[in-house]
Amino acid sequence: MSQLLAAGQRELSIDLKNLEKIDSRGGAWLIRAARSAHASGAQVKLTNASGAVGEFIELIGNQFKEIPPPTPSHEGFFEHTGKKAIGVWEEVVDASHLIVDSVYWSFIAPFEGRGFRWKALLVELDETGARAIGIVALLNFLLGLVITMLSAAQASSFGVQIFIANLVVIGFAKELAVVMTGVVVSARTGSAIAAELATMKVYEEIDALKGMGFSVAKFLIAPKVIAILIAMPILTAIGFIVGVAGGFILGVFSLGFTFDVWWNQTIYAATVRDLAQGGVKSIFFAIIIVFVGCHNGLRVTGGARGVGLATTRAVVMDVFFIVVADLIFALVFYFFL
Image (tube, rainbow, N blue to C red):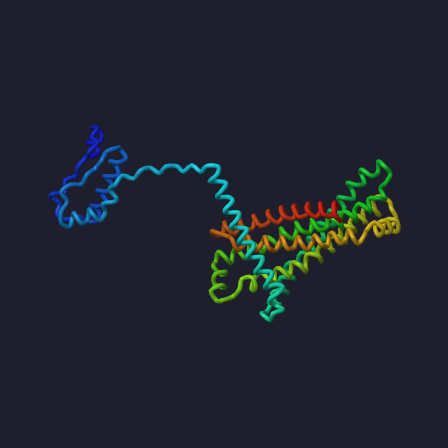
């Protein structure tokens, strides 16, 4: 056959008249020969097959047909945009269902006598709150030192170094403590939530819970929601105190102010309104972190790589939504409050 193809023959016929029987190996040889001819632009016909041979050739007949090369699909702008929009809408619907179920099992079902996993709540509080105190305090303390040093370099040229105390306490009360704490908690707790749920999803533990009649929102998510809503304001308060203490230490020991002067300036600069802004933000940031982590963990696909991608996506979305929410709060407090 190769000689005929080399000679330019484009129509080949294989006569099976004298063939009395054929096995799978012979059929594989015929298929290979036909595909080799198709690759060279020739056509192959099998003729005069009868009896058992004819039945076998009929059984594998589809393998002798020339397979057209796949045409590359070109996705236009509207198709691409529509597919993205549908994906976003489906994700919004899934997130809405998750939020409704979580709110019910966290805040309504326990008062209806449907139970709550209090031991799981204690475990989540230890992991989300107690174990995060160290890193939250350290980063806010360092941030307090940095803000004070950078402010001192500018304030010294105007002789208003004492107002650095006002800047530090107001900045940490309204913005720095809650944002820094939110970023730390999202990187630490939000990623852990996403990784935990994603791993359970990959190993089909989520499906097993559903199969046994357990509510995923009650069994896994509700303790996390309550724990982070309790822990986040406390961590923010710790971050505020430690951040102001960092500025206080630098102001007293490096800028030359006395303890009483810096302390009085700090106390008089702090207002309940400023502290309330940080407290309100911490609640909303906690909601963002826990629901984004749970949402990405439950939507994971694939194996270990899927878990890693879901975790990364959760942290990125947490930071993005925290910044957007912070911008919205800044607009509200500036124009309306």
